[in-house]
Length: 498
Ligand code: GLU
Image (cartoon, rainbow, N blue to C red; front, side, top):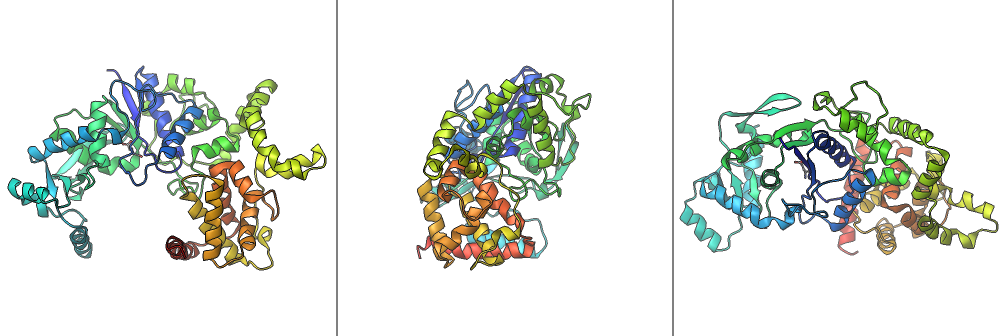
């Protein structure tokens, strides 16, 4: 069999280490069996997908050195590889499902659906579409569509019985149909949902093995039904374990930087990050901890994947990276540090920030230490200030971090405006408001200009430092909830332009 695997990231936000993890395993699987590895962009969520995010997925995977045989940038016989360019294809299959009465038009309003959900919740039932529009005649549907009534297309799901499918890593899995919703397949804007698009694309792109995160396991019955309705063979499924924070919760950026580019900018080697991800739920037959991606491909055996939640541990990753750095020859080390930071391009951005401020070359390093090196670990003492108390510091860091996370374009003007507006909304003098941010970014209250520093460091390091600065304060879950609430109010104030 010609093996074909894929990853299908959604271009929303930063490229996630979870995407790198899935990419590595799909890539290694395809390469081991001499097959193809595809990159498909799942951008049907038009409100959240951005071209910047797509570009950063490419950049991150290229930096890691995982090459794909087919994809939006390299093309291929099964393209297009961007779901937003495949609308007609999905529409055609959605129509086929409707014609065969395996899917139906649904005109229910949001209010009605909310009411049904609340009633089901009150009765302690599984929340699920109640089938209201299932009985509509073809004529009634045609009339309402012609009248321009808003609608979606949902798939039919039996009320009784159960779905049993095989996960190659877990064995047979059984889920009763009563727990499966009559999933929307085509949204009111005409875009397919993930569930229709993933089935259609995996089939048309000839995917033989789906390796993806275990969070999709509960969706499989919907996919099994769609494969049956469309008379298509089901690809083999391997649901990999989710990466976890050291406290076993699902990997989250609050507890661990999750952007792949953070690791690049922080000075990790792509080989070390890949090696580390390769150890997540998998091991080499001889249990060796240090291995290249070529060695992983050679030794790859999906039977060695374990489904227990692997812990993504920064200290272990740093240790591994250190091993790689020590293995380099002096000339390789020089070349690597140059390509990381000490190159013409980086220096040409750095020097204008300091040239005016130095008297001797030896003044340089202390000024830029936090731009070319890690920021020191912070304690509440670093935030002592004449007017800002602990809570004010915490609020500024929390709100700024959340707003910067959502900022699409990392541009000086946009960041400056966001900060100015927030300072105003919090009723703070701009200078005072900026103080904790200086500390978060540079480790001290006075440094090179803040906005220049944010631009030089880039979004991934800057966001991680501001978010990480909150760790200096013990913020309880309750306090965090309060802060989240306050942020909602502040955001409303900001968007109302007051
Ligand atoms: N777009 C989905 C994701 O972001 C893909 C899931 C899958 O691989 O089927 O995780």
